[in-house]
Length: 309
Length: 78
Image (cartoon, rainbow over all chains, first blue to last red):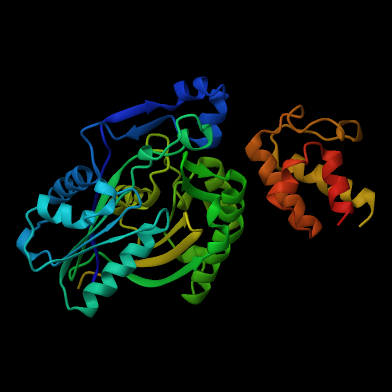
């Protein structure tokens, strides 16, 4: 059965001091540190791109797993801020940069903060349907490209990052169950306009606190599990205040749900794999992941550790 | 719902969500900002009040609710 074998991430070297940004926006530093929960934001520099960040994540993955590039049969890349406007699809550019074999399927997925949970399911299903054995799932959504630099609501939140997940027939974690939801009628809560990224903070907040906990609970019920059965809850790292309250409303024990965005900010579809990479060494038995945002789109999945025979 | 019940809901949700805030009748017409309620707390308070009172408060409606008294009037008007 296919599943997650390994995960690696990459943070660009560029940094924005969020407290200096707070001063620029005449916002209380304490509010930025404690409520938004972000002290520094990783930012693409001029030399960074979706492709270079994905390649850097892949290089880190090679340090964790034994990878023969000639065996990679599938590359899926999740982004809504691709290089070259998305044409060609950036997975093909990564394919070229990594010098992968021609017999390799490549396609992009356009999703935001729900993208990791969605994308894992998509690549595993595609690979299973086509009898593929090893594939790579990348996330990289550099929101710095679309930020309105006069908009404190978004400038104080978003960071750039990339991740890659190795999907293989010798996994450490396999998918147990997943739920996917969309509220397209609310999509103007987070959208790109001529001015750049625009966010209705209240609408996104209400969505995260009201809809996401319901899906988390529904996913647990459908798997005939309770929060006690889950070792680790990886929720999309939107902002500290939003996370704390989403966790509370979902009935999740706070100690099982890391909030770790001080040095990353909200990295969109990379936020969950960033956490997953750090947490895998602790060998959680069951992991619940929940991503939510642009769309409005939200997805929750439970992954279980593969018992070694 | 009578006024007394509405006031009780608004006061309890403010105290529940805002650290160190103790509500009293004389604070009902103060602005939420003057009461030390920041922009994120306001969103949480409005959500909790709406759920506790069983009323739906749209984003546009919420924008104008800048004192506890106005929140009380709003839920009584529903």
